[in-house]
Image 1: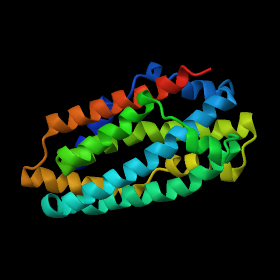
Image 2: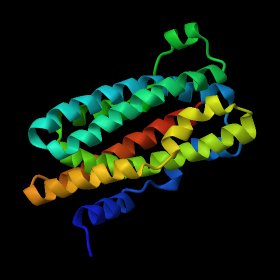
Image 3: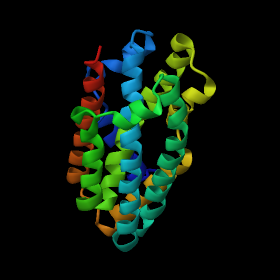
Image 4: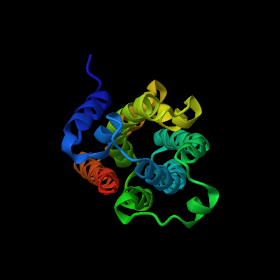
Length: 221
């Protein structure tokens, strides 16, 4: 038996899978070749991304309550996840040798912050159901990156379990979140609220901005 929403999520994720060459940094981390300063930059950029995405997801949850009630649980869960990830990020920042003064004075890189800026744009302007489809496709690649980084931090950099917890958190697939996404997309399809072309465009831009995140960090020495 076919499931339109699940099939659409699967095909969109496959269509938007990033070019392996678009992420120069994760392979370097996997080989233990990335510098500690680059890892520190990754940590500090994430300290800007996580709270921004959390607020964007909360706003999407609020908008969904009016237009796409089936998507409320999805965005609320994402926001809660960002909060949990933020709690785990501090240990990674410290393991990279960053103290409070350095963290406070850090100036984020534009190429890394394009992604959360676009997520914020989506929160303000895009149809929530379209965003569910776009984000779900994007998260597939992100989870794989995090799994690779978590393994490499242990194998090559001697990081503790606590220091790797941020990446472990995102590396774990969530069947519950997938079910929420499927339910939201299915409801939108049945109500005629899903613009597949627009959602695909949102997903494409998310992948481009994520590639910018990694390539910007990959240029650091």
